[in-house]
Image (cartoon, rainbow, N blue to C red):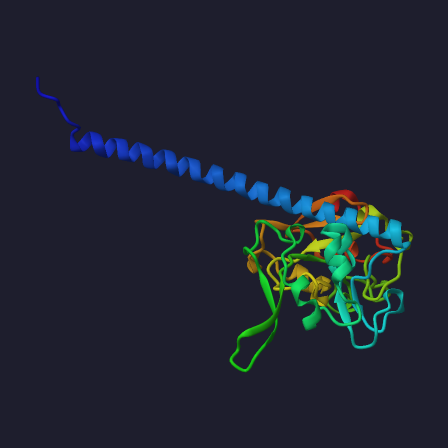
Length: 274
């Protein structure tokens, strides 16, 4: 008996069916991946909020959004600077890093390089560029000599610029939940913890977790927008001062976003506006 092989037409039909199935499956897989990235990002922010709350519980105050010395509350001398997440090291990562970190010199000092160049998983959004690195300094041959592990999150520093561009009223109190050199408390958040952003996703801004650049302006974060190629299609993740992580769509009104960035602006916002 002779074995009959597949004809060219049959092969083309099979190939066409396989291609169709792949075409139907890939969008579903991409949608699941996007959803997982967003979920993990929100979880990262929630864990950071827990760290902030734990810091306040033990220190009696919220951590500053950034430190620019002199800052007596942390015994930081003049001209020395540190980022928010340095304050939270003992709450989001191993206690060894917190114990070895030196506050008497800046985050970019050689004495802190062994610590600040390490990656901290909870500070990296899974939807952003993998393993981002921020270069602090280069030598004469343009070779990096000091750098730090990347970070996709940080506190927000609202300012009077929001009034200049029409996002807020001039008389607004432009203070965020975690101001630089702040010794504030949750009780200072007069707009309500559920209506005040504690920390926000900042995309691929190139900030290192130990640096002061994790404290970003409200306009700088929002201007990333859809055209900025954010980590999540359609919006970005934040965590409110009450610990609830939220996904904000880029379609949110700038005035509402600005109001969420201030802790005591006196704005009236309803939950369905964001």
